[in-house]
Length: 243
Image: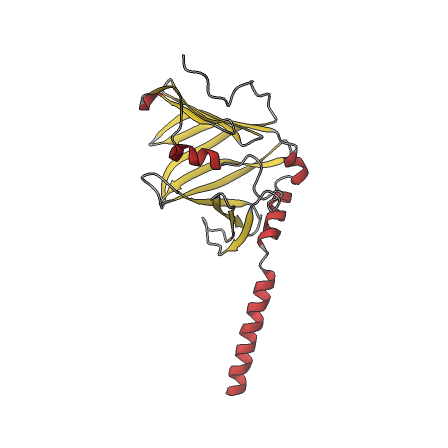
């Protein structure tokens, strides 16, 4: 009996060792992911990206567009019943126009409002991560919509903190979890579910996002058109002077 118990213990240890060897490292996941969505060289050649589609909120759908460019510049436009909402960042200043909240002129965001906008990176964090100051850490995966995943947490010294969950079969992210660091929902977690990956100019891009807070859907984004390196109007990201 003692020999059987010892043999069983050795088998468990050996099996655990094999499992550990089979589990890819955070860097291996990152390398495979970037290769699967087009390769590092192709993504480094992307200087701007524009997506058009619709945003679904509270049972209603609104036309929207998202334009982003080098320098972490971004501009979101949503047409809400004839009123245009804009949230933009030019690499230094985050600003917005939100008519239905009484913000009818371009106005700087508060530090709390700007935090999430400034946190978005144009170049994928998994490209040249170490050189750019990002740390990759393997975390426990979870089952997401029936798919097993590997988890990778991405952080830096400036407080950047996002955890990606990669489908173990295709090694592409199906969900990103981000803690809310300020405001009334501080401590909650935003979960962005990504699906419907499609090829755009040789690159793979998710065309559907389901954004949730504490398990409740906040917004759904459906992309109907994506453009790589479109012409960008001069001053698109900059805050206009008030009239």
